[in-house]
Image (cartoon, rainbow, N blue to C red; front, side, top):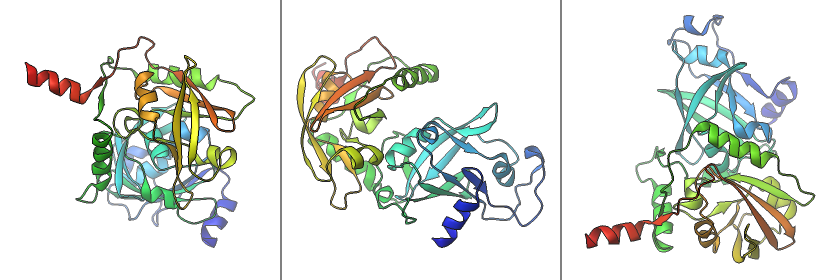
Length: 316
């Protein structure tokens, strides 16, 4: 870990590519796929900038492929795999679509140190170190939000846990909303980014496991560890219609993970919160949140319960 800290101190930017043993060509397309392995680079997670996208250096891409890939797979410490799309922007290449899933699900926070190691077939294995220079324990218990996520282990325990949680609470919710665009998602984020309050608040982009299946809402550690108690307790949440709800604020035994559990399912369903909507939780009192919702699509199409759809089909 001393080695890691010395690298961080010497770095003049937030990231660094570990050089190859052989001299690297200047052109991405002139690179050969037979370069020396392993190939690694690191990133220092700087919130909020690093939340939205992650830059992948062209020098790293040059070492792993002749063609620019469209999608990477990121294998986190838990063994789960997230798919992220690589996009070209004016100043380089970024993992953007899917990256926020990885950040949220792995409880990443400001100052985390991430090492990306190329495995094979455009898959990167990711190690996440906290500010204490140790691997983050919470990342080994990552949430499971991407519907297309696969797991290196055959058991897929994370997927089963979400399914069991969904069934225990009465089944999944099914979206009836039309397909949304990337531009609409960015507009919702931009609108939420303009929110200002003198009271503490946190912004969370909704994922499948938050509003369709798992019905738990993880809170960023940078927020709850500063503004909320380090033990489980009941709280109140006031929605945009000023209706008050009881909700459970849960903290795990090692005090690494905190989330809203009991009560959140009813809140999200009643307010028709969908994946990619952006929610702001404003702490207006020590035990009371005010919920602000920034929708990707303003027109609301009610969610449906999976069991209701199934029952209707059985009656036909």
